[in-house]
Length: 429
Image (cartoon, rainbow, N blue to C red; front, side, top):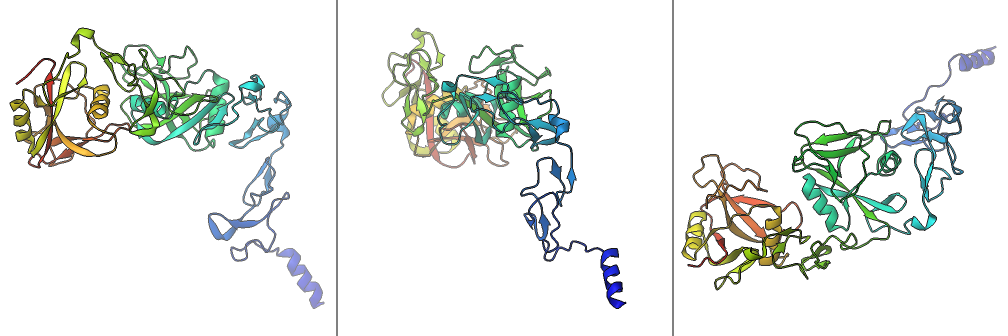
């Protein structure tokens, strides 16, 4: 009789799953394999071999795979499965030919268009194009500069099928990470264009006044595949795109105005467009040109024309900020004003070697601690890459920093550094 009682007890009171020896009770269902939980070694998970239409800690809840796949949506021989990012949707990744893509594996390109490989750090998200995410965060313009430095441009997205595929391959469908893509109106002229010159008219953004550059958030997989507008000066990671087979910094033919692309003398992973760049043009892409008459015929002894129309020199001695400007005045100039990112790049390229991080005073500061940075020569330039630090009021440019953003640094105005002087073309003491 006692044996019957024990058996009745066993059937009436089934075993429960305990954290200790979590897999001893074989808790997983539907063919899933029990393993210690990745988040808690005293618990378990049933992820391995759990069918794609099932979920739950014990792989106990299943939906009919036919729900999402009932209409046999996949094309070109692909197999329908529940989407990895949404169990109520589907994906056609399995058995989709390598030259086809899209949620239904519906768009195919010639097989010859498929990339044999992508450069290190890049992934082929769309057949024929390699994509990468920058490790750092930048403004919209500096994000494109980063992409150029690795051989591509901020990504163009040509249609909804590409949009879906980029999100599926580069994201996990759950984490809403924002990245710059190449559509924007950074100069606020009222027209959105692709920064690489593409004629694509595809867009899912809505205009918001004052927010002019475009973010794609990986994680948003449900239609419409929404884009978002942010202020162009905000800092986000870049989504870069380069053509299939392209590799190296010159792959995207970035140079303009007849200049020849070469590996940068300061960084073999970047490029420069110095050779054959006309003397009245400058910038990493040789993209900014001034009238030829503006070019200096010559500069005073000890000065170098770093930007067409202006001569620059470095003082032999070190001074406080105010005394550094006094030195520049004594040789016919002023502490240097830097008007924009293109000038900033060119000054660093011409005066530095891209490797030695030498600090020099430039003309931006607040030496009287009144809470307003101004250019000591009275310039109205608003360009700046510094961050305010209380008690550090005068600006240092360190030659050697060539990667965007071209950072400036604040130091105490009484510290002693060499002066970077600038004078107008044709000026002399």
